[in-house]
Length: 89
Image 1: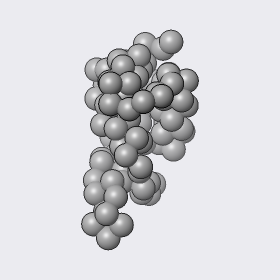
Image 2 (image 1 turned 135 degrees about the horizontal axis):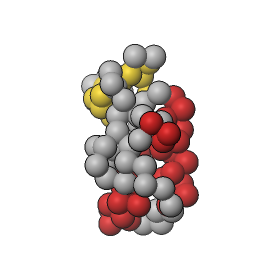
Image 3 (image 1 turned 90 degrees about the vertical axis):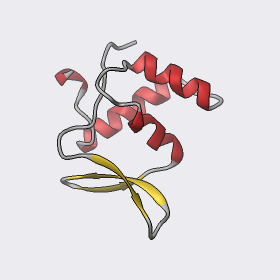
């Protein structure tokens, strides 16, 4: 697997939308409404934890976590500009 240690990119932050009563990530290009799993993934993106470490944390919290799925979610967040891309790690 990858040694990428993802982190939120500059200008992005996790928040909570009181109207929708749901976690969100705010970034310069917009807002994404998050489910609890996506929020857990992003909260693990501290720039120190590698993808395998993030997967390990999620496996302790949720059943059926697959490393490939976590990596796909992370790459999707990177493509949206929410976290630093893998090549900039």
